[in-house]
Length: 270
Image (tube, rainbow, N blue to C red; front, top):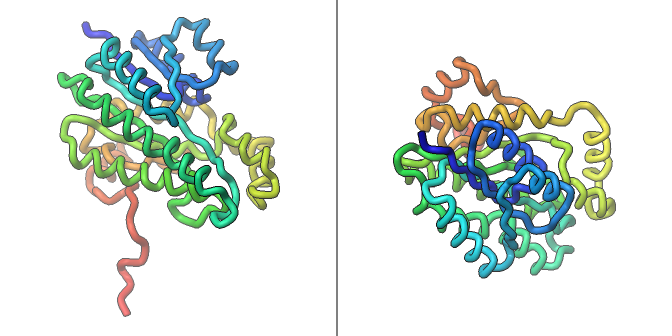
């Protein structure tokens, strides 16, 4: 029986790390990328996870990682893209545009480059799964986080586009909600630029409303085990959607627009 092969870009993210442990316990062969050797790196190293350096802002670094993964993880089954940064935080006109552009590259463009280069090496005997992560901004204007938000909106749409273009790959994007992870440190480090979200972040992280990590892992595994025609191209909210139920699966199969990026108000006519 073929061993599942999983690639986790930014495996040292908190979600990436926990996915790695869950899938390794199930027998997956796993490779993950890191940029800095933080605590998560040391824990993963102790668990004998294959770790490869990757700088998403360096095309040569990306090429080197792709070469390694294409050779050692040929016919991969799962690809997860976890990288994210909220920087630069602040009103668009007050941010340095180079920093803003760099955020788009890290949060979106470089991830698309990696996906584009790895797709030819997917397992073509099954329908492999590609997992992205969404953020806020789909239903409102998230002030002071424009680069991060626009990157996530673009990722939501590319999930739908790619799933429609490719019959033999399943693309899903997950909105994990508020999770106690390192991404919030940028907000905590810039209280003036974060404005109201600074206190909101403190309250959320100190409260009991954050999404349990196990819920995120379970919802992702549910998506991987679901049929493409049901889950493919969707933006799944771990917190608000009734994932894992027959009732939701029936509704998703019936409604092709559900949990996708759409314009609001089309039903109104002057």
